Each structure stands twice: as structure tokens, then as C-alpha cells.
Length: 334
Image (tube, rainbow, N blue to C red; front, top):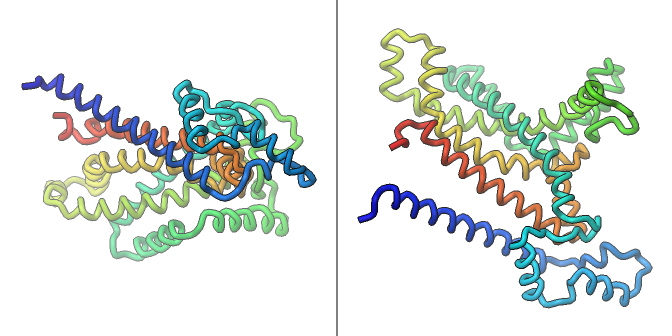
């Protein structure tokens, strides 16, 4: 009979193998879908007056004249050596392209995710504590509208209101939020001035992503909190004379901590990968915008590299959540 330590080691090894196989299956499926999708990268890279011979030479240079199986074998060898290839459109290593875009998406997605959980958890608890009231009804309508509205529609509406309408109404400069870019074009700013300009440009995209995320979190927290508030131990805590703030803040959140940790881990990759419309609308050079432009240009190496990053984020987030669950729920420590 195996000892508990050996059994745990075998279980961890099995989980690592399954994760690696799943990761490789995701990348392989992405590779196949890119190759069967209509469109030739050579037609996007050549000028309109290029000849058919120019297209043949370019395809040979990019290695696209080989059979799909040979291309897959070459890509597999590179991936196993940590080489993501070279971008078709930019001519730079894919690692360098991703290195420029990933910090932007992590900063944008991380800030919006933290705000969405802080606001969404607070709103959900307030709704559960005041269920059936006018405040609960109003917050429910707002959260449903935000969660159901397309991100690009909300983004264009925010630009129309806080940029163009604010300018037409001659509002103060601090009330006119910039619509495009991370910084003011042509401005030579340094230090705190550059940081203030960056924060001013990030107000609209961060607020938009946080509002959409907070709507979903609030709905989840409200539903979960209502189930917990009907438990016997909550009635016992109230019968003992504990104030409502202690019941909601100390006992309710403590029992929802495990589910919130899991939800946070699942939402993190989606926030980084799901900011496609926001980054495209506001002109932020992050992973979402990079993925859109790479797909339109049929830049296979960049699309595969982006898919590898997104899949790795999902795996890491799930592993972190699984390691934090014993802290969140002491019943799992055994």
C-alpha cells in the first residue's frame, strides 16, 4: 500500500502530465484552425502590384509551401526549444512582440479586475442584505444591463459622452477624458507628469472593463450570499446579538472566500484575453489588439504565440486558485 506522501506525489505528477497534454492539444488545435482558415498570408504582405512569382517566393521564404504536416513538425521542434518563431508582418521575434504587448494587457486587466471584484462584491452583499427593496431592484437592473451590453457599444458610448459631448459643452479640461492611446501624442512628459498622463488615459478603459466585470461579480455574489444568509448559523449569529455588519463582513465573506478565489482565478485570463474590443477601441497596444491585428493579417506565429500565452495564463491561474483553496476554506486542509 502506498504511503500518503507517495500517493500525493503520484497525484501531482498525473496532474502535471494531464495539464501538459491539454496545453499542447489547445496549441495544436489552434495551429490546425489557422491553417484551414481562408486567406493567404502572402496576399496581406505583398503590394497590390506583386506578381504570382513574388507570392510563390514569399511563401517559400515563410515556409508555407510545405505540407501542413511538415509545417507542424517544424513548429513543434521550435516550440520544444522555446522558439515561437518570427512575426510575418513585423519581422521581429514573436517573443519580442509579446513582450511589448503583454505588460499593457496585464496592467489594464489587473487594475480592472481588482476594481471589479471590490465593487462587485460590495454591491452583491448590499443587494443580498437589502433583497426585495428598491435599492436591490435598481442595482439588479444596472448590473444586468452592464453585463448584457456589448463592450464595444459601451466603449463608443463612453467616448461620445466623456470626450466629444464634454468638449461641445466646454467642460473643464479635467472632465474631458482622452479617447485614444495610452499617452498624449507628441507630448514629451517625464516622471510624475508622464504618470499622470497615463492615468488620465486609462480612466475610460479601466472603468469600462471594471464596470462590466463588477456587474457579473455582483450577480454571482448576490446569488451566493442569499443562499448563505438562509443558513442556520447566520440566524444563530443574529440571535446572539451580533451587528449586521459583523454578520455580513466577518461571517458571510469568510464562508464565500473559497468561491470568490475560484471566480477570481477564472476571471483573470478572461480579463487579459477578453479586452479585445476595449484595447481596439481605445488604441491600447495590448494582447487583445495584437490578437485581432494578427488574425486579420494571417500572422500565424503571433497568433500561436498569443494563444500559448493565454492558455498558460489559464493554467497558472487555476493552479494558483487550487493552492489557495486550503487557505480560503480550512475544511480542505486535511
